[in-house]
Image (cartoon, rainbow, N blue to C red; front, top):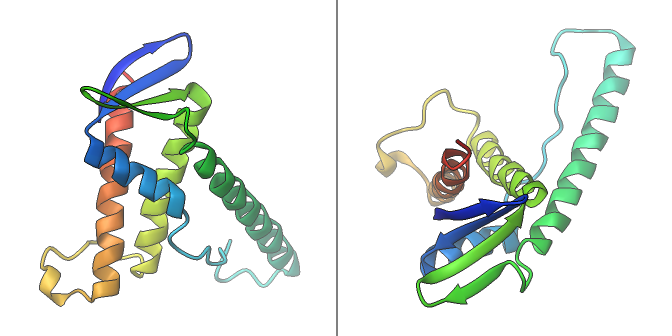
Length: 153
């Protein structure tokens, strides 16, 4: 995935066909993990903490639902266009930011599904098939995230 050009708030990226299929597949199947409830604190006995957690978790669920809707828009027919030299992806600045949020959600969600490890094992022989899939999703999302971020400068 390479930046082909940026002008007037539109970003155009050129992807090999296989990369375009992978990115479109990520977007079509988003989200990959459940949204687990978030705890604000582990030790605060204040009853207001539970209410704040409830509000936070409702907001996170709503945000993720909106990201899922936006992910479907990012695979619309006007986004990925086949060309002789690959597939051109055209995004507005807002869509680009949304794509970064979706990719980050995939990475963080997979990390949480893996148990929030401080370090990911280098030895995949110790990893179950389910965990291996989450690790691969993290890597793929990280690749695309990195490609988008590198082009910012």
